Image 1 (spheres, rainbow, N blue to C red):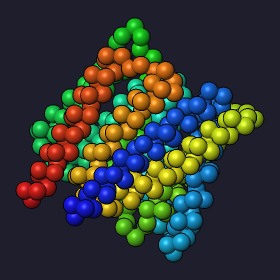
Image 2: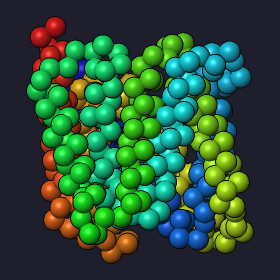
Image 3: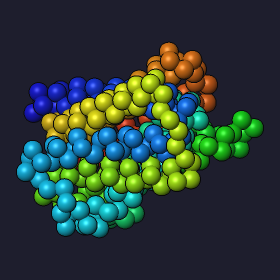
Image 4: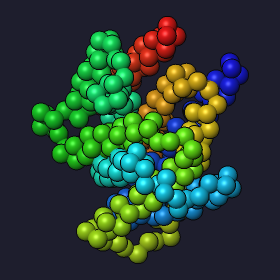
Length: 289
């Protein structure tokens, strides 16, 4: 098991690096392309990959299982989370976006307590509260420099939190590739709806490269994170998700010349520390039971 945990941790780190590079490509593409068009292309190109994976495992994509309430609710969370994330990513510094998105595990913990009846002690509730204070410190809604676009990040965190939360209720016989394919179908639908309002433009060769990079690195990242979750213990592997923020800060500095200010760094540190503490408390509780 120790070997599996080590492999799982390395896979999770690799997945976060891949996702950070995907974010870079999306941000580069957003300079010339409408957000809806980007979402549509990423979703439409990802669906065949996971469709093929499902077929290779003997799993049907078109099945009544796809109408399970948990699958439909997960798809809704995927759409809302993607909408908030993509709009914020196009307009805000990469490190700021990823700092706020690190609050997602805390949202999942809170949702599990409120809606699934999971027992969450006062220490983890305290971590959730402190983490949300970190989010406020990052976006600073009362400051003169506040960008209202940051509010889309709140939708992104809530949507992706909903996605991860209801994933627990999806029947196990509905495989990961099936779930992913339908999630990307929902994202493709979202992109189409966004294009109805925002339109589309002719894609230049350079922008095709950004989109291709986003599809390639995003798909590879998803495969890596799925494998990581199945290789090691969740309580050990999951905290390595936070290294995505480190990669994002490096990319933001090198590629976009973005230097996070003091409040962004402090808020990010608070969010990550709160999340790691909540993971530790959850693991300690599981060890006692």
